[in-house]
Length: 135
Length: 386
Image (cartoon, rainbow over all chains, first blue to last red; front, top):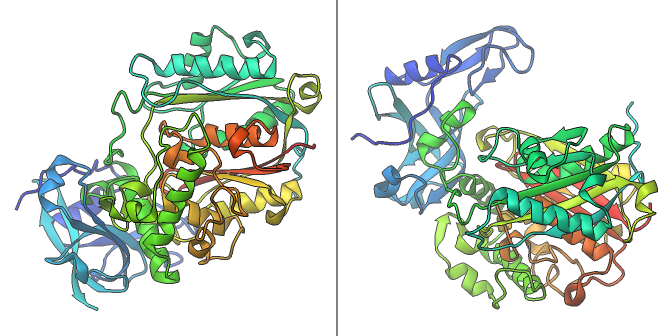
């Protein structure tokens, strides 16, 4: 299914993340010097200034918080209403915003286990989304 | 070690709003001019006295202060257009004070205007999908509302805060607005009516959200020395603080720990004032949850107790914690950024200009602005005595 969503303005810092998503990999960064995981992408570690490496995340995480959107901010999202937008804490220790695919928005709770899924929205952009896999 | 040297050194000497509500025949700049002339008249000053100009705004100009200076027909020697969002005008008092204390200028005009209602520029998707927002906007959050909703969900989960408690914030604001002739919404409102309004981004409903209006406001700041020669009771700056923790909500370290913790701690310490010594409190009520989070983080109640604190009429007229006495962004006016109106109301309370909604014996006030997605915070503590 193709979603004509507002697409990300990809920049040189973030290109590898979106390239990874297009091939089904959820990429985050880790500092080569201090080991701190990092998201969103930047070329240097925000803790120690060290250089970073891209790593593939497990795609496993838990819901930190969520909201059910009833009034879509963009016309293309109207057919999806109501839909869940969550902040997901990945097992690797970084946080991402994501729509959570769920037949029933009631299953999305803080602490729920989620796993990444990928949704192609254009030739250039595949969005990493999450699905609930456990309580 | 840095030392704060602004305490009692500068004062607000004039305040005014422009026309508020729906102003389809007005421009951003004409609203600013109306408010500016009103505030200068309130102070007993003229445009020729203004040598510093602070204008914050967005969407309509690259250099807001320069454009406004041209429109007002003045050539100030100090200009600022920093935009911190909703905390901007509270922060501007600190910056104006610093500029005056440094001898860069003597009399600063801070002004704002917006036609966001009439020009329909307020959109729930109102952030371009770029920079850190490229990882949010494609997922469909209604920004900034959904960011605050995420914080509300988390606060409810951690502390048992309820939708009824959030509704109490909107109901109290309405009760204050009923005593403010300039407020846009003055019909009685109940908790049940708030809870019956449509969900927009859960748990926040339509009546948990601030208004969308046109309007402008202006504040004049000058040295304490000059303030004492002017027409009105000076309202002195006692302490101030500015803080940020993130831009996009994903990058906020904890959703229930806002930058108000840092800005409030700075302002109280610099003023030498404690929370229980504040007589009237004006905090940005972009959404009902914003008020709960802010009161906790400023130290007026303990973390997690904000929901209970705002309940039972405590923050309503005749309650023991006078809050948002104008009716706030929820019921008085909200032209995009509310910060300037926090200052206007606090000054009026400290001058005993508030008629039916006057807080008895108000000597010390606190204003707190919140900007972005809980991203920025600015606190000032103001007093009748330097």
